Length: 524
Image 1: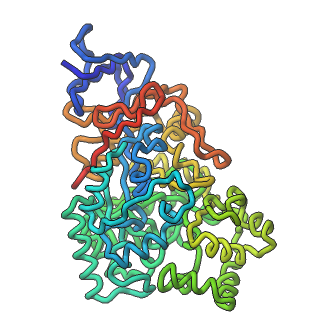
Image 2 (image 1 turned 90 degrees about the horizontal axis):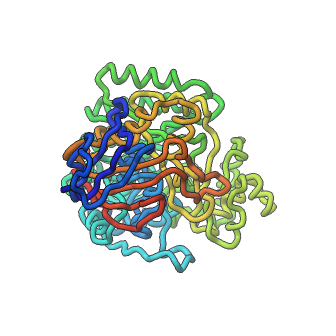
Image 3 (image 1 turned 90 degrees about the vertical axis):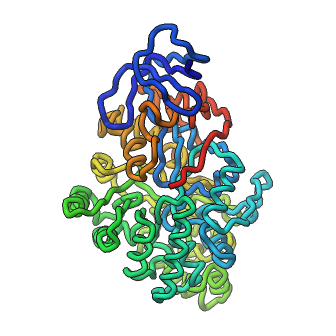
């Protein structure tokens, strides 16, 4: 007897194969039938899915929900899109493994990206117990709290590096690299699936080739926020490939956007580089989100000499007139600041400026852009985020069509006018790029959001609609599914997602969240 039968749906199984009309039978947390079941088959419950697509639950291969899942374990921003599994601690940014000093630095330095419930004035935000230090401790915390999605964990290079050598902007010694290697190997033994690096961010940008290669080799797989996505994109991509070559491990290039006028229309050139690398034996793949804007934390814009020593040192510099002036002048560097928009701030001085471009916000305060950024960082105690409109639609489409591309939201769970990718990524692919523009077939898109990331990570019995696989399933209306989140109103749930099951339990039913917490930590 089945616990649940999904009857008469159009099955898109996550492999890329053509869709078929069939039923799905579920027992407990597993799929036990994918076939035309006889009428009257014994089932506790049967749901009619005629006219609906039944697909594997989506796997968000690039997220920053590490703390959000502890604050809001039902995780509605994602489950309402059909996401059932998320990959944490991307871009080298995260919180385990870490020492006491490393945790102190990380909580302050990247609070603008993750938030810090103890630092925010919102009394409705739960306080997180930050006592974990090991990967095993953090993963156990997710399990004990209860979670709405499954979790896959990557070891963040940044947490490891600051634990060993603080926020020093210099190459590590061989002894320091060895200490980092030990932390990585311990984290892998405790259930992590690989390493994430962020060569654009301090202090990882100071890591030598030797450091990157040794740590990636210790992990066996790495996902990388490259050193550059603008003028230096092509060189940065070659660097990622070379690290993978020397470490002899697979590489996932994160959020492969092509920023700046110089990269307009050059996606085919970039993909040729990746294809040549694959032909040469380098296992390189990528993920992207379906938008032409990115988002991250404001202090990442500062030159390395100003963030040397960590967040406390930066705030001291901002408090000294001459050093503050030097920072402001360095930021008045001629770039087009009109493409940068304040997306997250909590102080009374800046909360009303969310949604304004940097020049607009600066003008409201009677300051230059550089002066305003300094004021913003000081007033927010570094907890501020921005959106950068710099990519090009034709490149987004071309990269989406690459066989080895996957979909990742890169969503930031922050107050204010966050990037709409947090609430809209997966329905946007299905609505805009499948139904409206036909950039992808439905089968291609579903594979990029389920079977492909599961295979990339090596997840066991996840990502496909097959007998014996986990009952992570999304049911949606092909003619109605679409994102509703916009840059002006980013916290809108999508349309057309009818049911979502995680491990056989409804987390969305008839378009409404159940707030069930059936998610699991998936260990390597």
